[in-house]
Image (cartoon, rainbow, N blue to C red):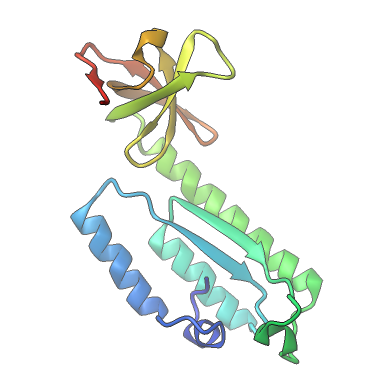
Length: 182
């Protein structure tokens, strides 16, 4: 929820940013296709510009697949609501916007990097945008659309990624035998 150890301590989190980074590194070695997500709070009481920058830098270093970013908002009855060094709303919003923009760049790059890859897709449904396409998810939870027959819903198919539009992969189904889920 922060890349700064002092802020993590004030949030009563039982880990450091270094420990978190080490876990992510080990997970990616063990499972290269794993999708890593996180929640990040911008503008926690007392967060300095340097502490915010550590969070920003850690996000850049880890390259999360997705990040659910929020600005801190005081909640009655919590310890943090009683802290005297509340961050002004304007600064919280500014920091949040920086984190959102960074994550959008990272996620866009991660999607584009998959163009040309062959992926196994679990077919979930007919695409909402095009009735001639199917929609499914890859093992790393990336939404993927491709032309195919509705009889493939509920099955795994192999797809070659040919484009990335926003946060959706576009693919071309490869010749194969589908694997039905029991």
